Image 1 (cartoon, helix red, strand yellow):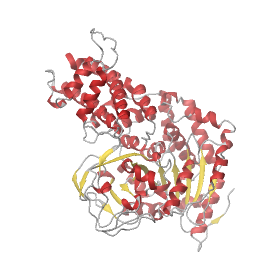
Image 2 (cartoon, rainbow, N blue to C red; image 1 turned 90 degrees about the vertical axis):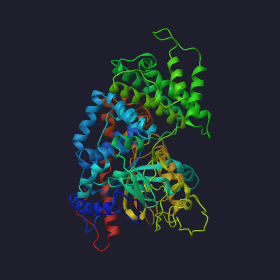
Image 3 (cartoon, rainbow, N blue to C red; image 1 turned 60 degrees about the vertical axis):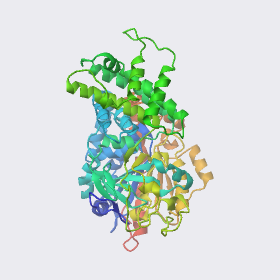
Image 4 (tube, rainbow, N blue to C red; image 1 turned 180 degrees about the vertical axis):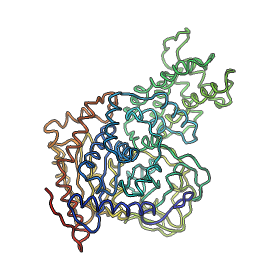
Length: 601
């Protein structure tokens, strides 16, 4: 794939195809160690669901135990949604060393450390980008605090072990939030977006760009402006931004994290500031709390409206003035008078053109960047804008057709689309304006569609034979199966069919492993994290202990170790079942030289 061009081709990207071929050799060696003899390696995919910090820790436990049992080496693909992506990406940043990775996890949650200054510095730096959104704030200020990590490496840094075949090929899921109506209406496959160490793009359209140019500006299929590759911290925030509950996120962002602004203000007190600027920094805590409170309120009360930023700021100013009189600060004036002044100035002129105190240029620049960050964050909150990035399909004209799903029929140039899926189809180019006319994409957590990445491993191009689906949900562990069944039925994709009554029965007292088989398509092994085999009758208590939106501060070392042990136990107790299905798929898909097992004991 040309690094400066958009690639639209059928089948796997050549880099992925080569990596998967190389991986087959390692899989065959792993199968032999597991006493399964086969001439061809079956393609096994491990999927991790979303679930915040719970999914992050549990997924690390699964990967660690699979490594210990010799199973991870038999896996071709690792794919994740939300919290699982944090664990999967860590596997590669640690070169597959699970012992070191687990030790690092325990160390981070023993010391309960978080580098606030560095996180805020990264956020302020991100705010200088034209595509800054709440995802940047979420990534650097929230997810980094949850995971106690701030990785600066990139997806492209994972290429070496992947291309050598020493580690499975990773796939990280997101969805295009602008296509949510198509997903709600018809479960449109083109809603899904994927990231790998080589590419980023829409698998249902076969449209990708090099991962090093994700976020760069393209027009008509050509690179017109290069932007630096986004780091893993940002991508983890993007992959883990399931913000379906405004009330939860409101509390999470400004009630739990407004103190971040205050702490940063302490670090700026050494600046020689006067008047408005001194008060702005001294009351930085109020910036975060007040901006988010007002702007989220405006966002809720003006659904469907799209006033310009200046109008939003003016309404914010009016909202601030309409509040009950606040307590006075040390100077004897209302605490938020300075905010009203600042907002009034912002509605008249840009921040860069405002008259600022005469001070050292470096200090003035730091403060200017900080205030610009506050301003941009407020504007993004008013629009509830997440995951903004340049659309690499903008104005793109393609000379070939590619349809990855069976029901995405090719349209003639004069045929009107008859479904949401066809609406985003391509014919001599991206003819749907939703795909080619948008200058920007808005990518968010794939858990808003299906909380596990089945749609990314089910296309026939990846030829997956066995799927190990690890569900880290705190609720119904079969909701992902229901959603995937519906998706596959709509698009005629082979997937095991399970009756709703049976799923309902299972969900009341889930076991640790379910094996689902259809007449065609992959075998699916589904592993609920909280199950009667491991938790007994205390499933609800376990779920409460590891609630999705609990802050990392509640995760003591003992709590982390217990969750790791539970996830490991689910793998260990089901090893024989996994080996049996590995042997079965090896014999089923390669009947000429049927797989032979020396011993499963």
